[in-house]
Length: 141
Image 1 (cartoon, rainbow, N blue to C red):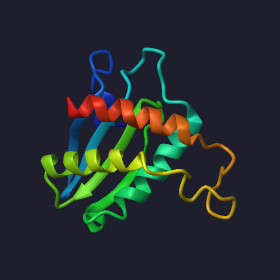
Image 2: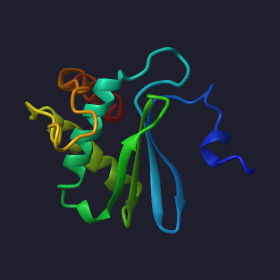
Image 3: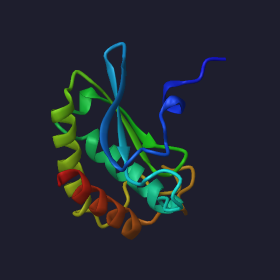
């Protein structure tokens, strides 16, 4: 079997940040790397789950909602993937920065009720906000 592109990247040299990971059939995949891989500092599961709910909600309610294909976590818990159509890298980064700033305004996790979420008990709004703030400072610098 062919090794997929994300497994061909050297995770020993990868740094936290924002980058275009690839493009296929007009869909761009962005790597939102919150943490340096394999260093023992991972996003806590409950915070990661809440970040997914928060940013997915914000991105899919933005003026670019029709161009946001997917937002979701990396299994390694070092970041997220954002898939878009029809948007360039600068636009996506600006959208992400504005979305991370909007996380500050939330006093609840969207879609975190039992009827809406398959693991509604595992959320951490405070942890999610802290991780988003750290990442925002990183990509704004």
